[in-house]
Length: 282
Length: 274
Image (cartoon, rainbow over all chains, first blue to last red; front, side, top):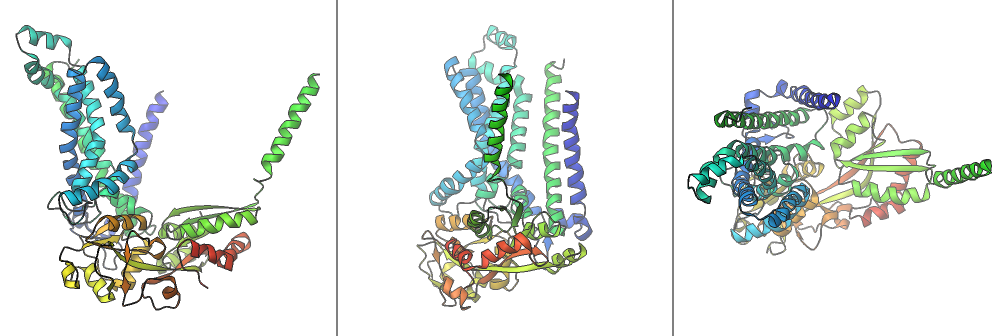
């Protein structure tokens, strides 16, 4: 068992080392500052430019939009399943959510490309339906089961005594829910939201298919963007082995890895802090 | 009694091994990797080739032109498909490894410039295409069409199709940064088919009724025009090998360029050499 646990650590370290070793040569040709804050991504042009700011913003933009969709959807489902649904409904809804989580991302991507994008294009009268918004919408639906299942766990861990105490003080169901249960589960719900964000920012196939792929700094949600993951997936296969372009794709992977690391660190920090506050540390 | 049972089992096992063994008796294997454009050619040819050459088995993988050429250099494939000629850097890398990258032209491919079927335009000049893709023209009314923003769709800048288009149509100038970059010919065709204001480009073999192929400099994007050289947006397709092809690889490449192989290439939507 210990060996298996350490094997995970071994793979993690291996991946990090690979990202560093393969990504570092980028900075022989491109200055770090130009790489992160450069506005143009022309990796194969004779006069090549390796600015990934549009890609970073593209990822964050789509992720932010996805949060707006996945939080109401995910937390709402968790609350409903935990608080309002009867036993039969609960037994039906939980597996459905898990089924939604199990749909391969390429299926979501294809659905988005063929159905959602043309629909949004006509509905909103956009020049093109493949936009950050389309990506956000689909990623939000994809991340919702993750958010819902972790948030639901958090809600179910709230001790029964909390509710009983609240009812005993004369609070009604709504007051108990908003002032006692949700604050008590806040750390778990926050963790759920941030893990949902990690899921959204790391998603590749869907954003590759529905976000349009234009490497520009986004000004609205309704324009095509090119997230980091889509760039790596689309270009790795064709990049000349050992070129700056090839190495820069690993460097993008490193940036992405650091961003998700920050997300996870924040999730950990929040859950620890709330736990102490509630005296559930032990 | 016991030995009789044992004998029957042994005989059965031996018989099964014999039956199972025959079709697997391929003595040589050829690995093909590379360009997704050349992939359908390699697949179609490999399938029919293996039917008549039971001693050779072929595995075909995609990955892109870069992967195709790289896998020849590092020896992980016997044939590297590419929709662009190898770069000097790649030739040099092969020489470093002690062999010559050998170029085999197997077919031609034309790039069709496509729009939504509802688009009133039916022809553009190369100059106009260049101006659209570099950002000098961004409204259809400047081209005599219905007023509306042009949605420019391009391929990923690392793909062979992009590189060829960039060279043939844009003279190496940069594509406008807000162009949509799609990852495959099929994805471009789908985007164009669902977006009335879009323009894109795909391999000739991917042309369908869902999209409208434009005349370029008044020449239709047809196979005949690619072969007679009048259609300007056309290119060669390659299968690279480690030095001159030998043995099984040579037999296969001879088959690809034979009339039978070239017929399969035509059927796959490309342009055979003859």
